Image (tube, rainbow, N blue to C red; front, top):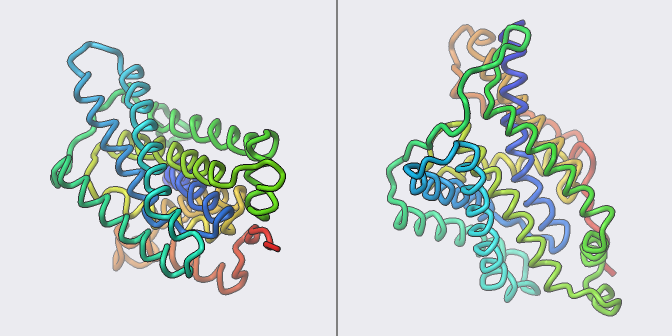
Length: 307
């Protein structure tokens, strides 16, 4: 039971980070039907930017939470500007092109950002400073750290804020109108280009937060750190229902729980034939099963029919 509770905690922490990145995928897809495969690299830039700021200010003597907050703000600024430029330079000229063109461009942008990060920050992994107290708290025999608590609380707050933004604000109504029909929304006074750029900016801010969380939780940053969480977050968005905010949240949390529980019990279930490094088996087998039984995802794909 101690192991089970511990893996549940680990799964919730991992799933919350997947959910933040998955929301970026699903928001962009819901509005312009584009899978931004460079989104995982935005997470990577957020992690490396926060590492740069934190290590540069480490000798100033600021408390750990202040360093983390400053690093987060800088990461959000850099990531939002970068994703805004990516949308404007790489995706906007291809908005009316065949779907294959922006897809290939997104893959190329992912490789480009990885290469630029390798040039700027060098390819060697870098240890991320432990900014928060490391004394764990006991929860029914399992342990949870302050960093993990901060990750869970931050995720809940940001997800709640995003749901409120999309459903109860003027910007959210404009985003939903643009998703349904950009031309009609433009006739009603909405600026589709502005809304699409804003969506990319919001997704980048969420990815920046996830990047700092990932770095703080695992204690290392490197130029390819965004590939795996980016791929898993995309799977989470598809698992829950691409274009569906609630689906992205549910898919992220479920994927994290599946991976964590698989890591805790895979060796026992297979007689030590398979170790925890094979937990991707559970994640992708679950994805295949769900999409076989319900191709639109658990909560259904929510993309408006365009007139």
